[in-house]
Amino acid sequence: MSPCLCGYNTHGNAGRNIFGRIRGLMELHAINAIMSKDVITLGPDESLKSAVKKMNFHNVSCIVIVKDGKPIGILTERDIIFMKGNNVEFDTVLLQSVMRSPVIAISEETESPRRPT
Image 1 (cartoon, rainbow, N blue to C red):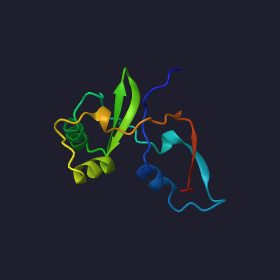
Image 2: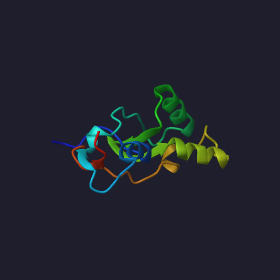
Image 3: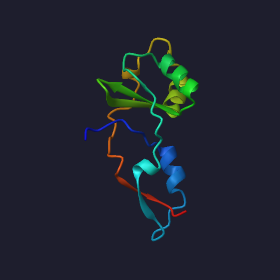
Image 4: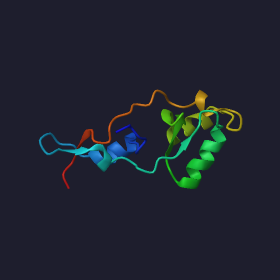
């Protein structure tokens, strides 16, 4: 089976799902149980402004930058706030120059600690 861009997991997702971790009370769950499955993507030659508009339209906190169908970077709300505070020009800056890279890819079957429900 070839790998797919099936979802993503950010610090926010992980924090919400691992919050309150206590040794001995944790269970392991596949990452696909906690990852966000609605992956919104753009190419590296798109503008920062287009990414912000797309994130707003889809009500997501990050966007994955892909090239030839493979994830090469990610842009988060936190990145956007930092850039706004540093007066980055959203109309002309391309995602390839501001995305976080490399993207760490793992199988959706990878186990992640999660508190019991």
